[in-house]
Image (cartoon, rainbow, N blue to C red; front, side):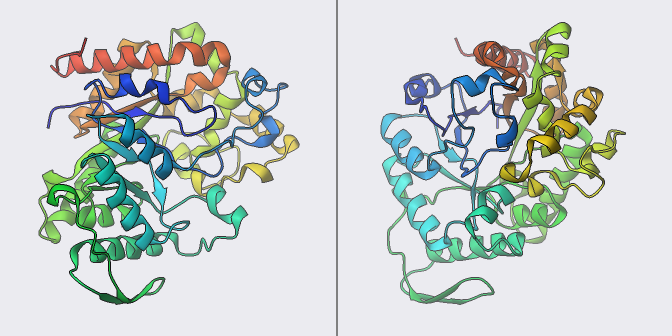
Length: 376
């Protein structure tokens, strides 16, 4: 498969469906729709005191339902595959995921990708969802979805989390093709699950190309053990980076919301780059973020202790050409579908306005480096 970048469609208010024509131009491999109840940014620093982004949006948590937005995007586009990035298997029952995925696949004429993950604390714990054993639940949910898609007539299933009794899903897939399932995550167990069940792999993290290659090798070994074609699993990656000249990046690293990116990294990951985590040695990154519980006092103390050098070490940064060269290392390690995520846009309105052009410049340069024709 030829390298091709992916794009994000924002699923927060204000909704930007007017961008769909550009996304549907043929430039992008797929259009990814985040699915959240809550964002990663603590409420306590989403105020004009810390960021001018708070002047245009009263909350960072104005999320819409990604599956509903996917259905709308399906009706308004004709070429680009549409994917959830990602729906967790805690908040939605797998039978409903199976039915909704088939529905959007028909609406899009076969262009829907069901992106699934095991979930994050901020989207589940505040709402009373059972967040115990999320990876076990994740694996069982995938089994239920596959069972309902692959079976003719009523089926029974007696699992740890889900039970089916003479359940059926007789809706046939569009043109006889089931929606691909892409899975997020990068823990050892999740990587094995990807190899066993997935059509694509969809991680996010602060890694080196060597890390990426090692994780991809685990997936492919798992696929082989389960008699699957390891090369049929599409490797993707959400690459968080800072794009700009050196002085601009220095300024970004002073912005509270950019420094708050460190909350998304675990203490283990930061230690791999030689840094102690400001939240302590047991911090698990995404798994521990609960924005409503991170008080102003705690966040001020955290922000003062963030070492900007740790962000530089963990994230690709520099001019579009420099970032593209770094991402090329991941392509050489097996990456086929990169999503360039410029975190510098969180430094404020001025940076956010310039961010889309920077991302496009990185994509163009990356395609040139990889010998891929750059779309007009």
